[in-house]
Image (spheres, rainbow, N blue to C red):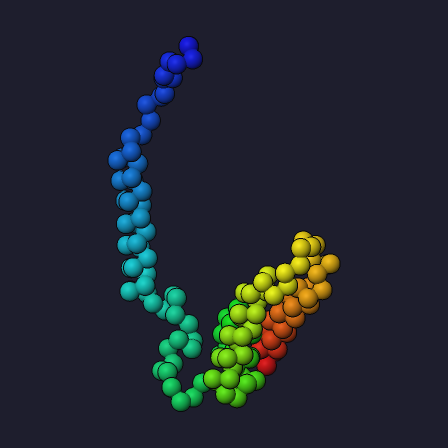
Length: 136
């Protein structure tokens, strides 16, 4: 075989056939999934999901997912929603503009005390509020 000769490739499955097989499998999966959801909902719906919602009474055991626990706890601590919104926005902006606040030429984070302090305060605050929200 010379350098510019096109190599012979084995004949495989053609592109439209490949796509049609995938589409067939997707349709079969969706049919089975919809059949389970519509005809056997008790397989996927548990306890509290069947209780009617009461907009004036939130059960005590309901909490947000772990990644929202810090914000949830922060909103429980600060009595004013507007004040909490302002403080959370300032904290987020502080974290976003952190590289512009400490303009040191040094790349090592251990030699940048302002940057290291602000990063540690943000991380400890987030983790602390998350744990506090989980335990409360």
